[in-house]
Length: 225
Figure 1: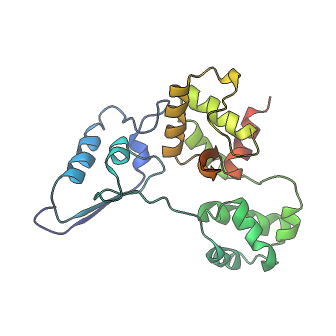
Figure 2: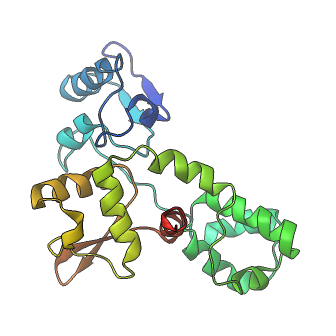
C-alpha cells in the first residue's frame, strides 16, 4: 500500500463484531482487524481503505476528525431519486411518493421491499397503502431482528425508551425505571449511534435522540405482550 496506490474496500464490516456487547467489540480471533485499521490510519502511505458497515469500529471513532486522514460518512437516504425505484415497480400516484420516501427514510432496500408489496397487494396504489395507519415491515423484520438482536440488555432498555417517546428524547431526563447511571446512559447512547440505530436532532442548542419510524414500529411490535 506504500509502493502502489491501492483502493481496498471491506464490506459488511459489522459481521466481525460480537453480539451482546457495546458497538465495536471484535469477535474472538478478529481483534487484529483493529490493529490493522489503526496502523493504516496512522501510517504514511499512498492508498485508501473504505469500510462499509452499519456498526462503526472503535478505532475509527477515535481516529477520525476534520483535519485527519480518517473520516466517516453516514449515507443518507434517497430523495426524489427514489422515484426510479417506484417507476420500475410501476407504482401509481406519483404525487404521494414523497410520503413513502419520508416514512422509510429513503432507504433503497426498504423502499424496494415496500414497493413490491404495494404492487402485489394494492395493484400499485400508494394511496390505498397509506390509508392504513401502520407501517409495513414484511421482509424488513428479519433484517431489523439481525441488527437489534446484537444489542446489550442496557441498549435494549434505552432503545425501548426511545421507541416509546414520540418526540426526540433528552438524555438528561432519564426515566427512573431504566435504572442506569448517567455514565452508563452516555455509553449506551453512543453505542446505539455507532450502530446506526438512532438519529441525533438539535433542539434549542442541545442534542436530542430519536429512532427512525421503521425501527420504532419493529420495536413496538416485539415489545407488545
